[in-house]
Length: 114
Length: 110
Image (tube, rainbow over all chains, first blue to last red; front, side, top):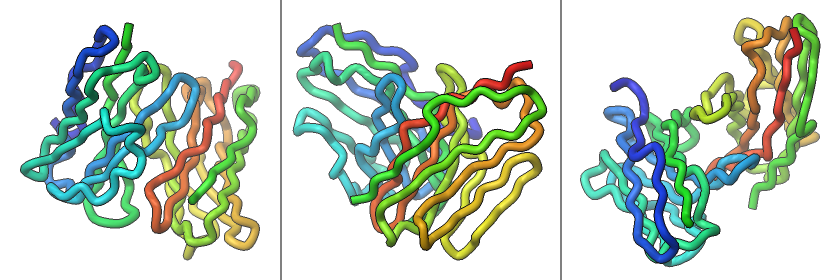
C-alpha cells in the first residue's frame, strides 16, 4: 500500500501480558518513529530509527518497552508485563530522509489493558 | 527540552468564517513546525509545515505564520467548511524529536 500500515488496529490484553505491535512504513522511508497518544492528548515521542539503527529511545517510559527494526523496514514495538497505564493509541510514522522531514502516520494500534 | 503550548483547546466557528490556532515553543533551536489534522479514530494527517527560514506559507485555504523572535506560530483556516471539523495539532522540532501541542478541537457549525 501507499501509506504507513499498523497492526493490529485494536489489541486487548490482560495486565501482565506481553504485546507486540507492528509497523510497516512507506517503502523506501529511512526514518521511523513510534509515538504514544493518550486520550485527548497529542502524540508523545517514544523512539526513532534511521534504517535499522535506533538513534533515540529517550521517550520510552520504562525498560518494559522495547522496539526493533532489524532490516531497516518493518518495526515492532514490544511491551512486556503490561500495566493499565500502558493503555493508549500507539502511532507509527515514517519519513523519507534524515533530519526534520514530513512525517506520515499510520492509523495506530489502540491498546487496552484490562 | 522543547515545550509546545497550543491555544485554544476548543474553537467553534460558523461555516465560512476564519479560524486561528496559536502555538508557542521554548527551544530557540527549533526550526521545523508541522501542523496535523486528526479526525476521530483516524491517523494524524500533515496539512502544512513551515521551516524557520520562512515567515509565512500558504496552501489554498490554509496558511501558517512563524515569528522566530517571539517563538510563536499560527495556523489560519479561511472560509471554513464542516469537513474542517477535527482536532488540530501543532508541533516543533530542531535537534530534538517532534514535540506536539495538546491539540485544538475545531468545530465548524453549518
